[in-house]
Image 1 (cartoon, one colour):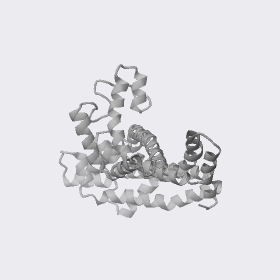
Image 2 (image 1 turned 120 degrees about the horizontal axis):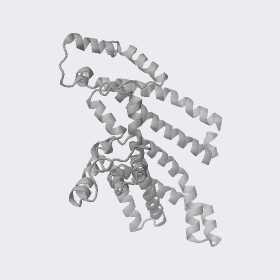
Image 3 (image 1 turned 45 degrees about the horizontal axis):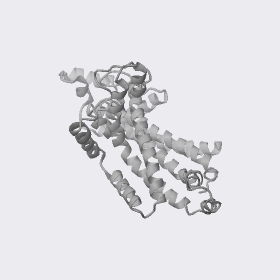
Image 4 (image 1 turned 90 degrees about the vertical axis):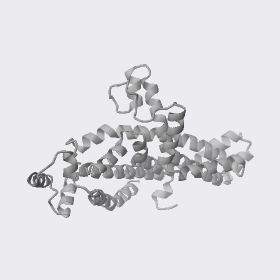
Amino acid sequence: MLAFLLKRLATLVPTLIGITIVAFGLIRLVPGDPIEVMMGERRLDAETHAALVKRMGLDQPLPVQYLDYVGKLLQGDLGQSLVSREPVSKEFAALFPATVELATAALVFAVGLGLLLGVSAGLKRGSLLDQGVMGVATVGYSMPVFWWGLILIMFFSVQLGWTPVSGRIGIEYDPERVTGFMLIDAWLSGEEGAFRSALMHLILPALVLGTSTLAVVARMTRSSMLEVLREDYVRTARAKGLSPTRVVVVHALRNALIPVLTVVGLQTGSLLAGAVLTETIFSWPGIGKWLIDSIARRDYPVVQAGILISALTFIGVNLIVDVLYGVVNPRIRGGGH
């Protein structure tokens, strides 16, 4: 198992180097002067502008800037925001819980409903239920996030008035930030209505973010169930007279979940690293919106850190899934399939 883990870690080294190059280079392709954006409406003379450029090291050749960037990363320094002048790590720590909370809610919704729909479709292969589930899954997977989010806002928020449009909690509530997770902090605050407000603010963004994952989980669960139901041990269990529920839950579903585990892991990384559009649409104060705002402000250190952290999150989740898959299926550790 140790050799398997070391092999996986070794393959990450070139990936990490590539990520740092992408994170460093992409923002510098965006037109605009970060100094002017940082100073806002204040006008700078040429001498002051040149002094600021030199102080921030932007006058150095790009290879020198890149090596300086990597050197600071190796020391755990993500840099300082050009706009807020706050350490990037501090801003990230304040915003990351919001993204985790949103991604977790989306994952619970997607996996819970996806497994139910996938198992039902697999047991009723060829039926109207099966065709309906697969049709909805195909539509859900191909639906643009920004369009789906706006449609739900127009219907549930504007027309019905059931859910808020943006934010994490109503402006009338101000729970103390204990954990950073608004649902937990609102519950701990004891304020009447605070928890319900946080929950209502979370519903639409989680539904939008989790729709694509729901479609993937449902399709994979159905395919895996169809394959497992044809296995000899399932037929043997039925021949022994076991109840249909026991056959499905204990014998079929348990084995069908092995490939689904991989898909869920990949989707978890995607949810954490790719909530940019959802957070922007719903003004959800997480790292996705933080990254988009920083791109508009040409805030180099924040954009670099945002890309790097998002990529590392995705890689880290995938590594955990690889290890779990190796535990569940020992043949993977030995290179078998």
